[in-house]
Image 1 (cartoon, rainbow, N blue to C red):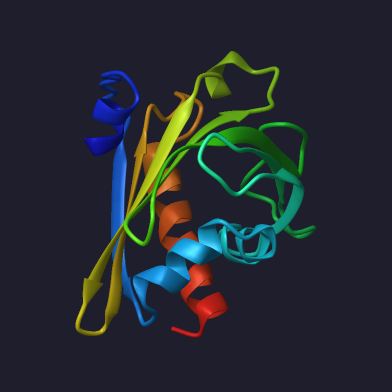
Image 2: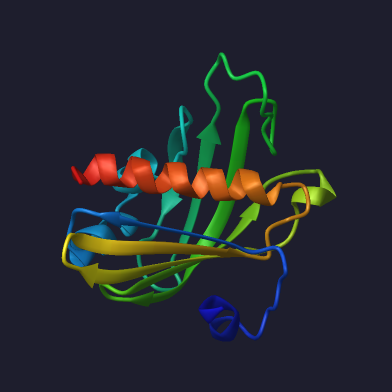
Length: 165
């Protein structure tokens, strides 16, 4: 758990790891994580829509964003409101073309969604492009691990589509 060591030894059993190859170089994927428009397009899983409210794409920089569920979504509900997951965070660590670590917190009155969640995205150049591995730690108890894993898989698909790979 690289992020746990980075951010002070957090050791959470509520962790998921998702990986896939994206047909783009590490530099392009790294740059996408530091670009508000790319994050708005690539981060929302499935049919969700992303709205970036604030974004400082640098180490220590803050961001806030909403993920908005599709109008016809009937199975999932938002953490902030019925159709919205709003969260804020910071770029906890950046290693060019190799690692992006976000520390995020959901804007929710429900204690089951509280706490700082760490998302570490590791980039490794491979023959077909870049192996992108997302490790999400300290997942709040209100989020089912399988939902987080599915959301990360969909995010990586959206990112691949955005980057054309």
